[in-house]
Length: 322
Ligand SMILES: [Zn+2]
Image 1 (cartoon, rainbow, N blue to C red):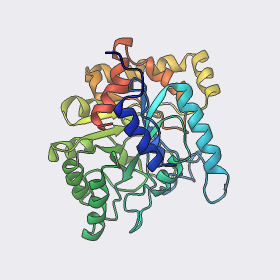
Image 2: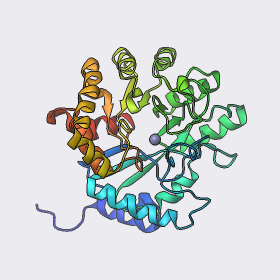
Image 3: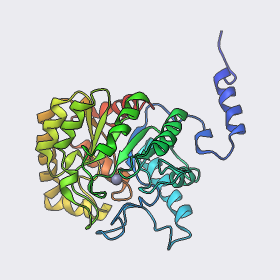
């Protein structure tokens, strides 16, 4: 018997949308075959030195730009749609409080304004807040299941992944099955310290916490060989490919013309080839540091077409349980 009207599931979904009106997640589920961008910043990252670096680590400065939220929401919504991104993970603010223990409030507020994709908050793993009271609040947030990953801004905060303060967070991440995204490699701040962001110590925590999933953001760039070694060896480590190159569409076009982008592709591919497993990589743009469609096209060049569904969608959906 053919079915002409909406399915029961569609009706339930529509009812949910009415009840949750105005909440970003109330929109109809986006198509399952879209791209997942695992690394965007829709609000100010509020990390030490984040505004003293080569440029802002966030789409607008909330202190100086009252129109920032609306303008930014429109900008990223348009870019996500144009690039075919249907799901995106939003990086947290680096500062926390008792009533926002994972630094997700500003992201959640901003996400309500964005149309075009389903956005998920990532919570921050704060190296100076590991008291029992704070960790209880963190656990209560994770219990809700809304936060899809935790992120440590290694280097921006002067703490290595092996810092004892991080250990209870790694245990909670395992308990609630949310990956821990670790900033690795070059930083967007002049007050950051690179030694804390080197990929090699990720090996140590991957071994000590075999039940925790770790994602090395930026594939440890420029220490790709070190990151590749950590990735190859540990079954519980993945890498996102965001911000290997940072710039606007014009800059990428210039690098394409002068051949430096092709050389960059070869350099990154040598790291990917060492790992020899496309299942270990996920796409991320680090927007607003690069245009989403431009950066998508750059990452496409790093893998043969047969691996694109895994890198741009399937690996991320499995890893972050989207
Ligand atoms: Zn980032």
